[in-house]
Image (cartoon, rainbow, N blue to C red; front, top):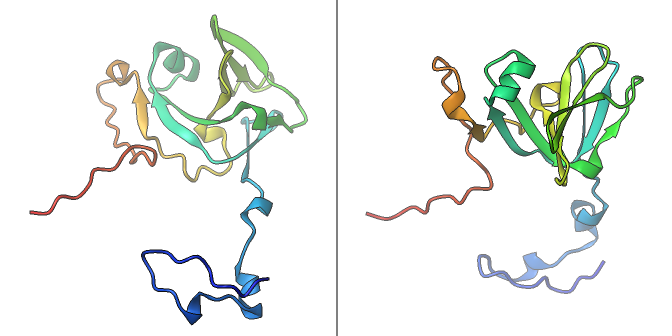
Length: 172
């Protein structure tokens, strides 16, 4: 490991503390070697299980007519992951597919009927039902599709969208 000074940053001074030494080597991590986060999920009976890799993207509720009829509830929580990161790992293998729209397919466990995934033909993303995930951290909904079709008694407080531009503070 080099003991040459690190490039200076405008937000902190440079000096002897900016040098690394043998004791600092354990603190430095090569981020290229970090594995992306794997999450697992599955159906109610455990026969159809999946694994997805990466951070959850666009967690949102949907109250469209398809979702409310298929789920029997007022909304479904969907969470996106890269389509190529999904693997079916349970003893039941891949789910049964149902085309709920000409370009949209949904995957259900053929044994217990749990809805697990939705994928559009031309999308690089696959949406998993948020509550089929074993670890739901980072899946608080940031949006609500078809909110105007939601039942009138459902009141939703959405999480802040981490990808949305944040308003800048103005001084008085």
